Length: 230
Image 1 (spheres, one colour):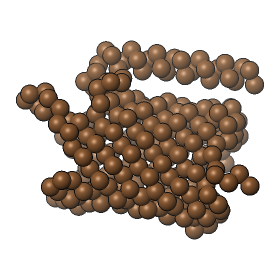
Image 2: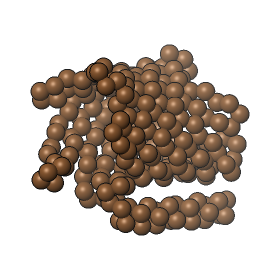
Image 3: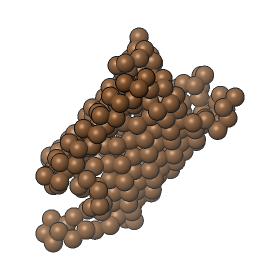
Image 4: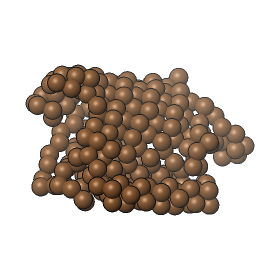
């Protein structure tokens, strides 16, 4: 057990050191997202979702976007097949290509999603289908998203306390406009289960647009501690 904790601590230190070095060396090419995701079980049917993301153009300090998201979900089966209705507030800070001054844009977002999970041996898979209605001060956009993730523990058979696991996901975004393709996100990372409800994950994501790409490191804290532990 001590060996596992020391091993995990060394991995986290190495990744953080690598993250810091690369991010400061190439601030225009690699950003960093600090993410908190909470999914609290109310009872066998209902759950509350909360999410905070602090996205930066560099390691930290040069804000690209602030994202707050919340929602209420309902399980169609026991702890699975979750329907959720949510709201998000997103504040974007975009650089002007000519003046290099930041312009701030606020977005209010309503979203509906369906999540289904399956386990194959020690592979944990999740599918998420999401529809977003995006409201800007002078515009409205509709977007569709499909997300597929896979987690694989490497030192234990399940995602239990002290488990170290590999994580990957791919998500595609589609618009309702003439330019249907919006973006694609491909991610890989390593995580540690602090306990059965809390996980810490470090990873790297490549975000591809129609006219280019941008890469982000991610530090993610997952909190699934239920309100009712019975």
